[in-house]
Amino acid sequence: MKLLAFDTSTEHLSIAVCREAEGGTQVWTHDGVGGAMASAALIPAVLALLAQAGLRLGELDAIAFGAGPGSFTGLRTACAVAQGLGYGASVPLLPVDTLLAVAEDARHARAPQGEALQVVAVLDARMDEVYAARYAWNGTRWSPGGDWSVGKPEALAGEGPADGAGWVVAGNAFEAYGDRLLPGWPRLVARPSAPALLRLAPALLAAGQAVPAAQALPRYIRDKVAKTTEERAREKAAAQAWSSTASTPPS
Image (tube, rainbow, N blue to C red):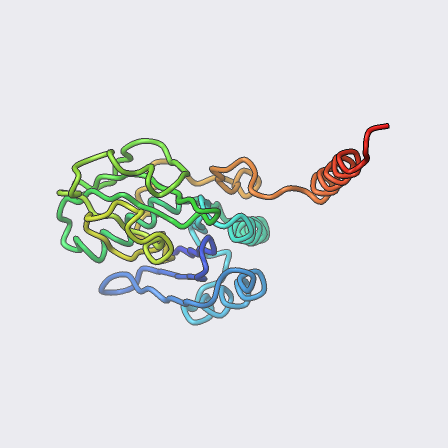
């Protein structure tokens, strides 16, 4: 199988390419700065990595990308690039849940031999909140433990054993939230890396989750995280009108 995967949902840019070869599967990876830099760096880095692997876009079986949750700008960047590449090369796209990719990144580090594992995957959602989801690995496949959530780190407490026995909390939110995030539970720094997307891809493809480029969309949890310019202007005008009225002495 020949696959390209990339993620720009966090402050990291992660890209990976794999192809089957004699003796197993070869993987090429690239890591860089994400955030605002991702939109300019992603396509050149993808093309360079494909060249290293000796692959053309049209030879790929699928393009996997981190679809969310995560940074709105990062998710839009990844989706737009995936759609452009998919359209141009007629390659199906595989949108992958970033929290599942965090869980897979943790599994690869904590249970590389296939041991069972339960993970609370968390990503910093900014605005004093975290994205979170629970997953269980039975040695061969992942099962979700419920829907995604977004909220204060403290909101995760009480959903499981007090000491986190049998679980690991994995993600990128520990530095930002410290003991507000499931204090006392085993922790592991993890992120939705492109190699994690590659490891998840075969099972997701077998489950029929690949889609045409036109159907590949970011997956947001928050409906809205920023006000439009028009909304800010209306609020500013309303505030100024209220201030003017409040400061005018009654006649």
